Image (cartoon, rainbow, N blue to C red; front, side, top):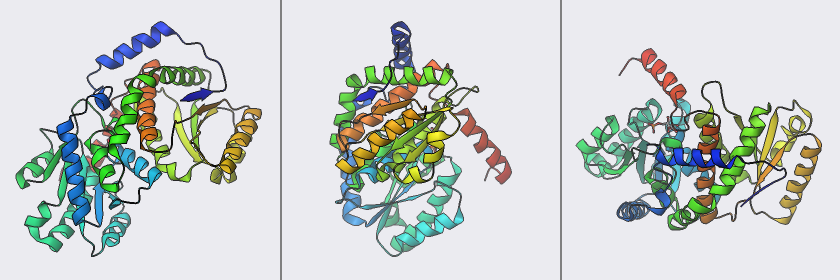
Length: 377
Ligand code: PA5
């Protein structure tokens, strides 16, 4: 699955220790999940997806950060033809964006999937109020409530309490899985199933990766750490498939939020080639040499493959360490595998930098400041 263009020595003992630490961590619920998925919940997700597909032209997915990037990444990469259209809201505080999303739905039939682990994040809460108003005006309260799907904590939070009070269909973000590691839980599986992604195949790919991704993840994490300690403080994820732009966004979030702590970590950036060769290409070739490039070499057509080759040669000549990750296929199975591989790499890599891969105190800091500025209401 993973190929690289330089050799690295792995400290086997340290790697083994880190893997054990990750397995013991109380936030490592994602580690074995693809192999132990609760099939009762899986069936409920599929049933809900079918109901939404039958009664709605649009599913409005409301969430931010880990509560939307992962599933958007896969839905946009695969662009399934058979499913319901997804509209995203609640991932900024822009009034303009919210109004655009409301008018995109227009008079069409729609349902809402509101996703927030904490159930208290401001951006989704505001979008949810606006879309709920539209839903109740269109269908009345009773039918409106039957079109709301809340994915949140099992026991606590404003969203949880509202969902219980009003009888919304509920799905759970497990306690032991944080936002950016939740793609393969109900957080991602429900919207993906509604959009027409084959979630059986996706989990199958991830389940296979539980074993097959361990070695490449250790290698990749070791390479990142080694480069990071030699002054390469920026990693540029490069893809040659424009539809994977949101996969890049999820990668930036995964690595940025997991690793950027205690003045540590590698700054994650991303480009789409060949488009960005005409904007960032100059810097990549000849700019400040503090970066390395990780090419995600999705199976592609012959012409695109030639550009991949050309870029690798040119950038290596330009003095950039170039790593290549080769996913096994551009489909659900391949993305299931890839998601798991990056999650594991990221957890190992953060541990190598000596930080906790699973918290995000910096994100909480801005949430608290915003709450103070806006008042608890
Ligand atoms: O990865 C994370 O944990 C974060 O990006 C969260 O997903 C994001 O802050 C949204 O939080 P919540 O799902 O509680 O609304």
